Length: 162
Image 1 (cartoon, rainbow, N blue to C red):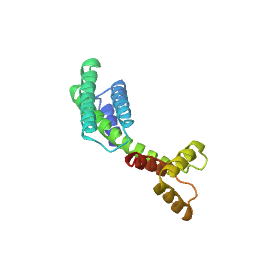
Image 2: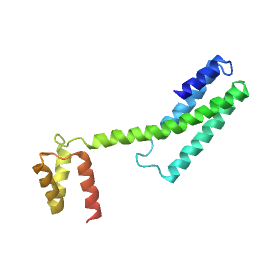
Image 3: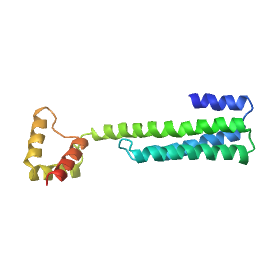
Image 4: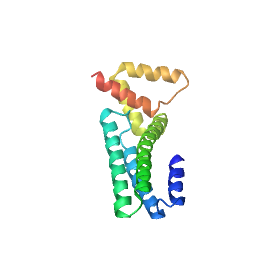
């Protein structure tokens, strides 16, 4: 919301043209989307560095594109570039968090209709009595079918306990 206010203010105070604002918003949105669809796990140091470099690159590119390429005012270009960098950082972090939530929700879905997942579950239960015990206890608590997340956790456990 704040970004929109900044760009509208720049437009109505004649700091930037509509085309310049469109270019800044498009550039920052594309970069933010690319970064947001990255790895689903928690931010690592390398990912934070990548987002920071992308933010700085977006700021510099937007500033040069608007000021030199589109002949807009330096002040308006600088403010738009900083807003574009902010869009990249906020979009990347929120996008990754939303993706994590969606993946978590997906992992809670039951494997009731997935025959391949059921076969994997039965193979793990035959191979590891501990996992079969877990499955039996889960069915006793009115959960006849496990979720994809539980199957994934069982597979990870089986890899650690050969």
